[in-house]
Image (cartoon, rainbow, N blue to C red):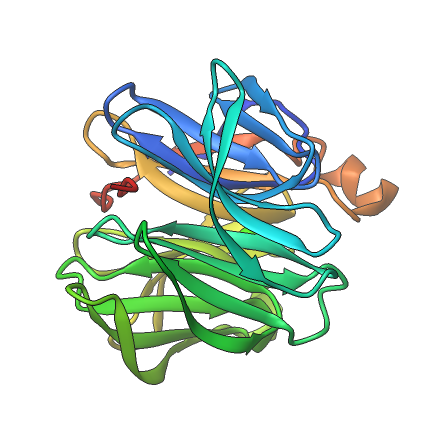
Length: 287
Ligand code: CA
């Protein structure tokens, strides 16, 4: 499997890839530059940090925005008119911002927060069903990757500094989680677990920040199945796309790398693609 650069965008913190099956387009964000991309094109420049987004069937986007001054909200964004409407506001510390999030298979939006200093455990994970926000849990340091098993009965979650992937029973009817346990432990030498997605076999594809790779794991056994090298040190997230849903799209970041590492990994901040033998789970939309 050969990883290829598809967008040489040099993002500061490329993240949050979602695949639109309808338009066969990859949407993704640069959190720190407050930008939304469709493919290689910037389609929105915001004035707040954007932690993640979801597609909506009506063509608008659900975005998780933080102004770095105490306001963290879920906002509907109409890209063409730049019209924004606030759907929900979280009571969050002024030093927190939204980080990774995505929709569950029933169309709820789950999004987590983190302290901007990346070390205080003041983050939380929220679930939004279109009417009300439920705080699933707090005490998170860097709320990151999340995904579901193919039968939608298990929810997987990453708080990056723990280097663990947690599994929960997931009640798709209510959005409640239960029975937390550790599914995977990531060795220090591999990197930090960041964004994640799942395939139809039930395996997890996890971006390893600082590890220049995407890894494939069996969450039933906790075993590492495959390593895909990426020519960017800080691989941040991944999502399946393409006509046959077998292409893995990978985001990356340049932030905090230093001159030497940027010279070694000049494509950092780009978006990469690799063909796999797996079929990915679809990107769920906010309904
Ligand atoms: Ca992330």
